[in-house]
Image (cartoon, rainbow, N blue to C red):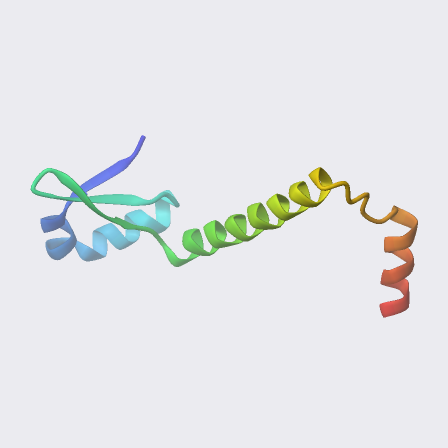
Length: 86
């Protein structure tokens, strides 16, 4: 269930909203005059979202490469390359 708070709560209860963001590990939607205005989340939650976005980007590239006919590398080749780097 989404967490929704009025913008006046952000001004008057900022410490409580900060604690809620850290405890719930969910974004908090801030409204102004009954309409959505802002989204607040903890830095940890934001960092995880950024990692997911990067992962999805890499997966999209891999899917495009596969669709274009790229066969990729074999597991044996990948392991060999890793061993060379070590």
